[in-house]
Amino acid sequence: MFSLIITIISIALVALLALATLYYGGSAFSQGSAKAAASTVVSQAQQIAGANTLFANDNAGTFSPDVATLQTGNYLSSVPTPPAAAATGSWTIAGAAANNVTLSLNGSGAQSICTAILKNAGLNTTIASSATAGRQVDCYGSAAPYSFIFSSN
Image 1 (cartoon, helix red, strand yellow):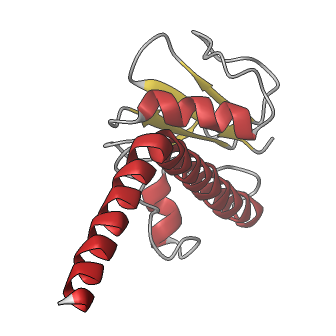
Image 2 (cartoon, helix red, strand yellow; image 1 turned 180 degrees about the horizontal axis):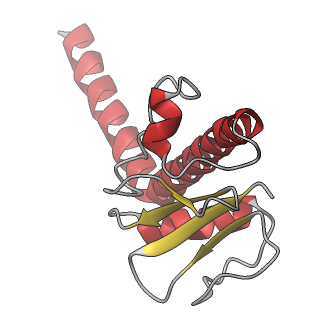
């Protein structure tokens, strides 16, 4: 009987500890997921930009018109899929004269991911309404969808 009482008290304490962790640490979990999604977005953009640089080296300095061409040309094994919290769209390449990889951030966590991208890049975390020239990584827009751009030039 004594061990049954001890077991019930232990289960109640573990449940109470789990609830307290969720209540007091909930923001840490959501911030962590935004940071992870931001890192994924930037990493995927770097991968596409690197493949596009290889494409340009093989094609007289002309960058690929789209991401699908990089895949069919075996520069990418597959087109990276952005995190669902970041975007529901797909990657695009801006112009044949530049190696700018863009993504429209319109997922459920778009604003927090955009802020995390700016913070990870060491920039002001206030989301500007338009792109700032000269940045390798930028996230901007006045409301969702926000625009993410990675420039390797």
